[in-house]
Length: 433
Image 1 (cartoon, one colour):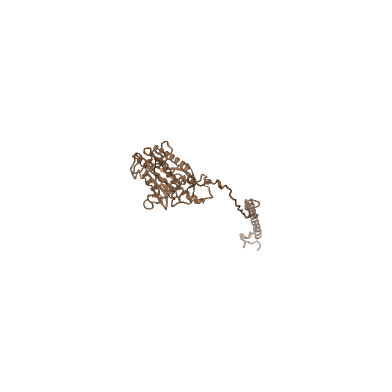
Image 2 (cartoon, one colour; image 1 turned 90 degrees about the vertical axis):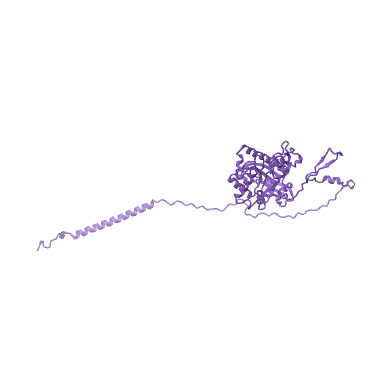
């Protein structure tokens, strides 16, 4: 039947063709949208790559070959031709009148001989009845050579040319003549910081400086070593280690610091020479171990300095008595032991002073090298009296005290300290040689 509603349903009004066409349009629209999105993304990525920072330029350094500083440097060097030198000997006949020849007289020969080093004194006694001269014998000092003399002869070197201010001393000695010396020595005074705490201590240090100046004058007069005074340094100064010879006279209490003790020990062990003088008098005779003075202060200072480096008294070293044959007494001038100092002469002349002043000289010998000597005779005052009005002739000749001999002994200690093997100057000379 037409128009029957028996099979009628809501889906009957749906047009399939219409739905198909609508789905196709949506598919093409989505495909176009996807392509547009991919195209925009690709363009965005491309724009980002184009705006990136450019890579910086790199620089390469090329080392060129060195240029020749001289135009003929690579060419063959000319060699000097050796020529044979021949010396012609020409005999020359001596011409002279035999009739004018004079006879050789013994008196002329004896007059041309060299005089002995020390002349024998001659005393004329006016009280004698016959008024005849009387001869008084004196000791004639021979030139005794030291057994441990150091040969430091350098024929091609002038030590004066090396005096540039860098070194304190350089000395050359002729091994055939111990009196033949050439060189220089810039002496310096070393002292502890505690030596300037009181006025009387500063006065003593000024007196020691005056003694050094007089000793320098005698060095310049008697030897070929040019000597001057460089200055004053404390034991804490780095310049202290360059001084080959140090003299210090201490009457008072000395309180060295730990650094000063360590420096003195290092100075002694590295080649230095320390002349310690601790005179004893009625005002400074303290032997208290806690508060030593003078001689005892020097002994304590030296012992503590060596202990600071592991060198112990009684185990590694001791105070040894120097015999009269030691090279120290025969390096330049000859002595039969140490000469009497100021205090020993005062006892002899005036009869007053401490009874424990010793004329012996003791020292520290380590590995065969004399590094320190110790006395209590006060050579400082003996040296400073030279040149003072009445100083040289103040004591009578019977006392056996002559300032010249004290100064000569000081010169001996300086030259011995400079020439001794293992000393600061000797090590320096070995490096130069």
